[in-house]
Image (tube, rainbow, N blue to C red; front, side, top):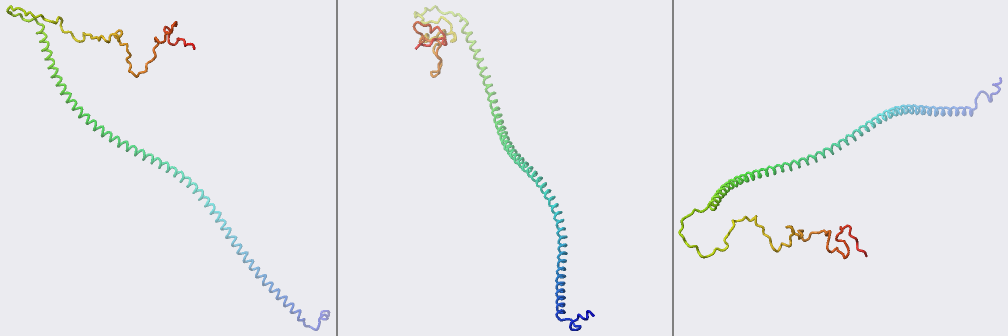
Length: 257
């Protein structure tokens, strides 16, 4: 009875209320549609983000592993670089040693060539010296033969001279000569002594007798330009009433001024 009494105009609803309800339902449906579509988009974005997060995590793991590999490779490259540097220094040292050895080899070759040339010159000089020795020996043999012949001739001449001396010293044989008168001419400068050797004769020049004392020359024997020392005693050092000449040179008194 109460509801029925509230009804206005019978059992019909007002059209404005129905229109408002329909409009509100339509708006609710639109809002639900938009919200559901946005929710689906957000869910899809969340799924994409999850997938991207998984991918980024995998990529991060790959980057970490790659970084570890790169660090290991870097360490290996550093070790290889150090070994290569050491090898390079060793190669440089070996190269220097090889250059020094090449220089020493060239020097040895040059010295060997010079020694070979010297040996060749030595052999040539030895050959020439041998030839000269042979020629000198032959000449010496010839000279010895000549000296031997000359010695024989000298011996013969000595024997002849001795024979002549003996014949000269022997008294002459007496021969009977007729008694002839000697000539009236007198013999002048008849020798009374035998011949004297030159070494027993001493010759002195009369003009040089005053230039020597006890057989030693008193004149200086130095050359004209030689520096002569001052004499220890001199006649020019004498003074009247002093004994300067009798004193040694170091004890002479200096003249007073």
